[in-house]
Length: 76
Image (cartoon, rainbow, N blue to C red):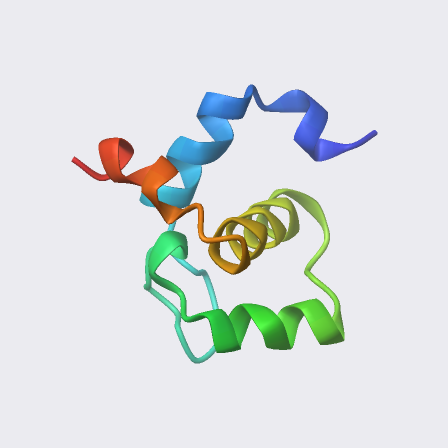
């Protein structure tokens, strides 16, 4: 079962502005503030399994496509 199918789109976007990176160099950083270079590293190495992987892949796509304005209203 695909984890992305279980989260409505709005909920997925909300998680990007609330959830913190649980491990690694950027532990404690809210996902939407992770640098593109870090997300590119995951893209090359493989995103983690489960919800975190879906969220990281989503924020990666948002950032590389210049769509970060989508998250602005949610950050308030």
